[in-house]
Image (cartoon, rainbow, N blue to C red; front, side, top):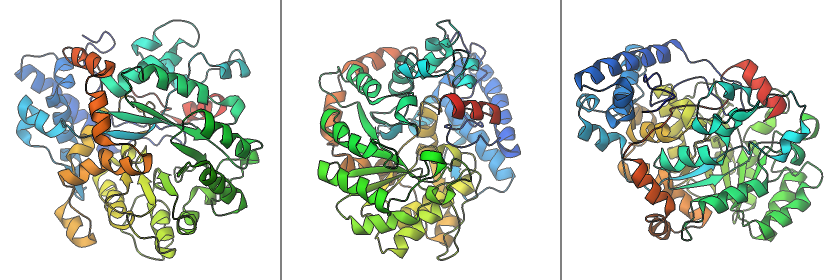
Length: 487
């Protein structure tokens, strides 16, 4: 029994205000509150019916299915019918039915993950009394129960990262990414990332973890530093933040600074440019968080891949059907840019779902429009799975929600959005990332099938203990602290 949540106070599908630290947390609305309450009430009744504790019920497949059904009910009551979680009512009590819906055997390649080195040198460069990631003090993960003033940081470290990602979720592979920062304040350095990769990869040669190389070309020394990253660290992509820079002033990929980075990456043989777009850090240099430059460089550099992390999504903005020329913010800035520059769907621009899907799970209408537009205009082969975990804890709830999400027939007919078929889900979950990241799905599956993680997971599943925690900032105070000392 999970000593941190023996009473079953946490739902397996986590709808709350947690952010990844790159945008200010947005409180959940009345519909979400009602859905969460209904899910708790139902869990209590279902657990009693099955002669289980509420914790036992919530850890089961029925617990996830029951929670998704409660969300459907709350959303439908309030007229949110553009999308829904396609779960049968009997799955709330029938484990086989529930597992058939929330379980699955897809190849899952998460292209955006994070962790923090809880003992890194970065801590020596902040005041002794600073409380980086202070919201974590409320978390009760086992790794964060090590004592000391900053013991809570263990919830963001290697051991919890490996448990949350590879034991408590169906994730097969993850790309470890970085937060926007200077070299001096990085909470995870390239050395830290490589060490974590090495620990995870002592698995008979499997590729469980890949890494990015962080570069902000408008910062002194970063362009030159690309050479070392490419030559010494076996990076899979360069990751950049166009809204980030000295004095809060960003850049465009299409200006001289951005082009210098792209061309250097090209010379180094690194074909993937992962760029944070959307989830703006604030009003300053806001235009650099939008996607007007994406179509320009995608057209000019057809041999490069541009992976748009967050897909231009802006938390708090309601996604609507795309209408050419309206100038709407959010995902539409990405779509408008590829249309204006005649970049065809399924070419070299990819839309990534980290934090975006996590936020869209709140509202099925928002989710249906955002996903439907990506599939239609960016391409069904070019939408990539990412979760931005560990900020949101284990990504299993995001996986289960996407496994069951469907765009309504009304929205399909009215806006030309596709049905989310099992084949399309499999593409998003992992198959679409195979090309740009240069891996062989069958080879990876063979390597990971009997590695150390697979063996440990098999034993772990006899008595799984997911903590259902989220770790990112949950309110404005925690967010500002995150920006000051951690993010």
